[in-house]
Image (cartoon, rainbow, N blue to C red; front, side):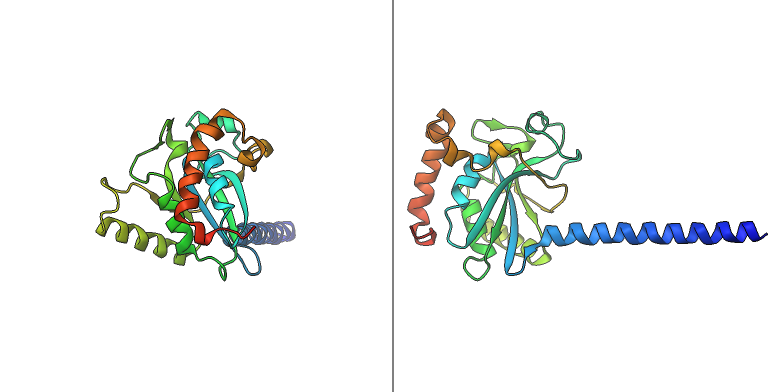
Amino acid sequence: MLKKSILVVFIIAFVSCTASAHKKVENKNKKQNTESMKGVALATFGNGCFWCSEAIFEQLEGVIKVEAGYAGGTVKKPSYKEVCSGNTGHAEVIRIEYDPEKISYRELLEVFFSTHDPTTLNRQGADVGTQYRSVIFYHTDAQKKEAEKMIAQLEKEKVFDDKIVTEITPIHNYFVAENYHQDYYNNNKNQGYCRMVINPKLDKFVKKFKDKLKKE
């Protein structure tokens, strides 16, 4: 009888500790997904090739850091090759650290919708596949509401000829991309894709949002 009692106490203690540890991990992940540090907010967007997106958003005043990564899939720590297969469910994304006092989430959304086609399903230009889908991974309920409001406004004003297909979903399964993807444009400006695809996008972006660019 004594042995059974000891066993029961041990099981209860083990379950309690496991649950506590699991909760701590969840809280840690939640914190990482909502705020990287005091005074810095996070935004995560998927709008085609992350090389293009990174080159655009890192030029905005108030943006502290832009990181290329993968989000929304089912595989842990996927490789670029795995994501490109379209079998992991991940989208190529950029994770933006920004100062909300210098640039608002709404302003980031304006750039997001102005620098890609949110009406093409799983495609941006010649880049085809679910990994290139238009998607907003929100970190807070406020971001979700702002994104929904923005889409409703764009639809009402008929900014695009076709219906917007951009997903709005909570951030999950985010993983940073390989080192060679980080700051790709600045490190490979003479590469064919950069000259033929990224440069034209950057030119249009700079002309439209010149008042929001970082001062040199």
